[in-house]
Length: 393
Ligand code: ATP
Ligand code: MG
Figure 1 (cartoon, rainbow, N blue to C red):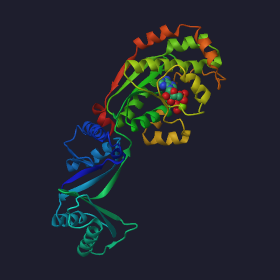
Figure 2 (tube, helix red, strand yellow):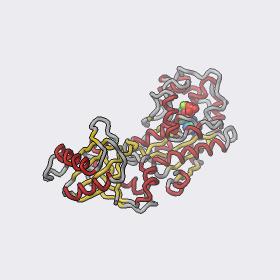
Figure 3 (tube, rainbow, N blue to C red):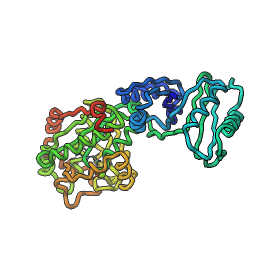
Figure 4 (cartoon, protein in one colour):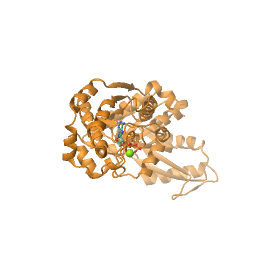
């Protein structure tokens, strides 16, 4: 019995003008992720079919459930659209299932089919009751829901529905740069941005020798976890040590975090230009720490004109942790290696920073030259999905 994976586009189909582009992007992403499997994709404007080798389903399923832009998909059987073939296929499919109660739903997009959907559903119900003993119809809470989709050429029959990840296909938006620390919040922010179709590269600020190579390794591991949802991620590692030391030497203690974050944004803006990215994404959450009050955000934001996307801005820590656990970044994020934000934390970081004061303190040292030097010495690691696929499954 040949099965196919039947994908419905869901929210994608509301994007009228861009529908073809979204579907093409989704198809490319699926083809790329399933590169190691013998598959064939056939699509039209409302559904996509993936033909595959039966033995590969569980592996393909594990990959498909992480591809954004897919809402639900089904393991379906295909038959020709004629009543005899459909009836025969249904009985064949149901002979492999165990159930006491069932319901039939029919969707007929081919209006030349001789029966309307409710009538044909009733006919199929009668056929099933006649051929399978000791079962009955339950329209409210059936153990088995049989769906029959009739198109002009083919009819799809399925009982198994899988939930996809939703969202938009990655690449349906251009690139943004994710500020990826080793914490809990930023990998979750990255996941949520990918879910909206944003292509991501990551930027990690490190302050060796104040931070360790273990901390860097943690960020590499987190990037690999995000690769489950996209293809290649460039991880740009920024050596922040010199700039951070200058900030501590030249600025009032209470302001070092505010100014450090202004410097981070300045660097992010330059990197965005260099790598053709349209926005910065980070894991800031309103009120979580002193640098994330609305006043702080406003003062820190002043140094860049890029949109700053904060996907977890309005989530509680517990809600963020739930997502971190779901995407399997939590256990890595809680490993206890110091980040450049957690070293030299002042006793009383300012909650309502004053912009003029920041600008005055920043005049105390030549940060422009240091930043130019930092940009020249970026270390980039390319992290690819296909090579690592076995490790990730
Ligand atoms: P936690 O989960 O412990 O809050 P965090 O990574 O969110 O960790 P914060 O101090 O809250 O740490 O930083 C806010 C955001 O700033 C992070 O989510 C991240 O996007 C960015 N950020 C902080 N430190 C770094 C860093 N060393 N490199 C890159 N981005 C960073
Ligand atoms: Mg945080």
